[in-house]
Length: 239
Image (cartoon, helix red, strand yellow):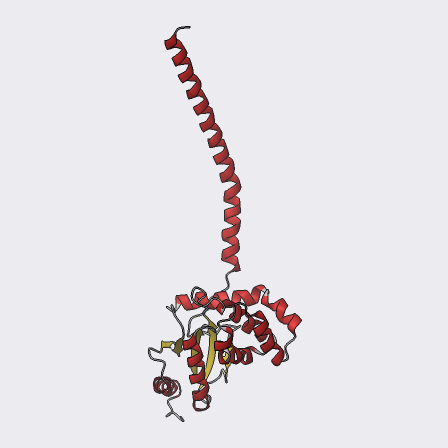
């Protein structure tokens, strides 16, 4: 066999090896597709069906936390993050205003944890929801905001939050179980999804009868509550 024939034979051998390798890769690709596609479909279906309904600021969800008399004509919906300093300020503002609002309005709190900037926000929301399963949502809500400056800078917050739960005389074993409860986790996630749909991108955000409050000041909140109360009842404000 001369040199040229040997070179041709080497080329043919290499080409045949390359074709066999490509064929094997094609087979592996088909197998991967057959395996991955059902897994992907299962994941997509799980995500879709694990997401609960979302509610706009003019709707009341069955699992909403309502402060005050829900029969009052004015609805104040607040999207907030427990680790957000501005949200703590808004909470203090509403506490001062509430004696002048409670005969006309009720307040709904919805979670909007900004986890990118507030690493403990998600955990705080879960603790508030877990406390809510023992009818202590608003009490935990107040503890988290009042003590925000203490726990916000802790490396871990679980023991601090459990101390609040102990003060509220909560069943700690039940609380721990509820932190991993799918309904508790979905509530926080679905609140945030609803906020996204309503245009919420930062916190706090307040809606009064569906109208977004551009400036969270005492005078503006009172003005809008008066306005919507008169629209709803035809009566002058009592505030």
